[in-house]
Length: 341
Ligand code: HEC
Ligand code: HEC
Image (tube, rainbow, N blue to C red; front, side, top):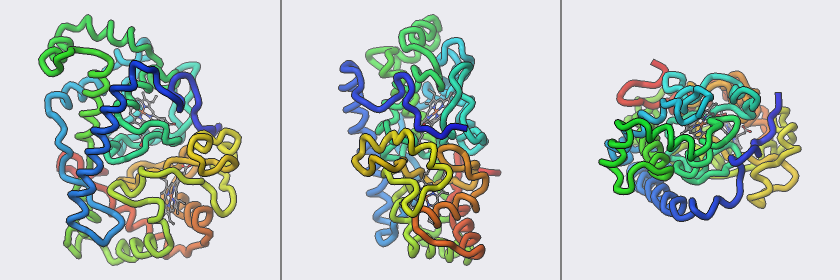
């Protein structure tokens, strides 16, 4: 199994083509405003805590989101490959696929674990190597990524334009009609509805002291005291920074990654150690296996690797169980239904 950070095809870090830049800048500003608004709303509620509740909504435009919802399951976006976004980001499977590493496409195997699609709108950095900053930017590149959607934009637009229903829907909502930017925006708008508020831990943050167990409260204390929270914090309990994986020694999972440091080359954090976007821990109990290469099968495994390699601590079984109880309390609700039900 390879755990190199993807550097394939067009889905790689770097300067986007000029024609995308204006859209990307606008999208970046919009995404930043979304995250800012969410954080501002949450800050009022729990000023002293390093973790903020997921807001109940992000104000996505319902008509655009509905169009995006349809496109999310539309295999025409992947050419002849027969996959859609929803093939790999399976909502009833925690928004991921449950596999160690994404199967990818025929001839172009996947390289990394599939992250959850839930709450992506609340992450400031996207992808394991943090190469994307906005949801729109991610859609624009993933369509042409050879091991994900494997299509070409002109072909996608041609196929979709043969569907009069979909072109009419775009025409009604977007003055410019269906373009690659409006397709990307519609999907991003749908993604902004894929949030999971009302986790027991969020209810606890909002003042319901009984919303989580004594064990979970002990776990949260350890999470803060030992410093997990220095990397996993904010509204998404992660998703907002890039860090070395393997500060106190190199975990097995990071060894292969060391050959291709990926984001490390871009961030200035380290040129010699593997660097990854710190993942969100929202709904983490639903998204096994863990790490960019899926090498940790259980949450317990992931917790001990983190404690040992990120914080230089060997933690007891009891502490690990308490942290696990805390992480379990981060599972929220999608459209009012608790994840995992
Ligand atoms: C073949 C499986 C597959 C398909 C199809 C797929 N994805 Fe993904 N997705 C992945 C994998 C694997 C990653 C992680 C890639 C990486 O960062 O190395 C990912 C990452 C993402 C991320 C970043 C999540 C985060 O927290 O960083 C978003 C957003 C996303 N995909 C949206 C989409 C959308 C939208 C589509 C359809 C246009 C799509 N994906 C199609 C497998 C897939
Ligand atoms: C120095 C920053 C840092 C600290 C401190 C840290 N983490 Fe992490 N965490 C990361 C990074 C980076 C990853 C992604 C590693 C990878 O997959 O390659 C990660 C991944 C994880 C994952 C897997 C998530 C997934 O979806 O795959 C869990 C669970 C986790 N951390 C929990 C913890 C816990 C619990 C602690 C405290 C004991 C902790 N982390 C401390 C940076 C950190």
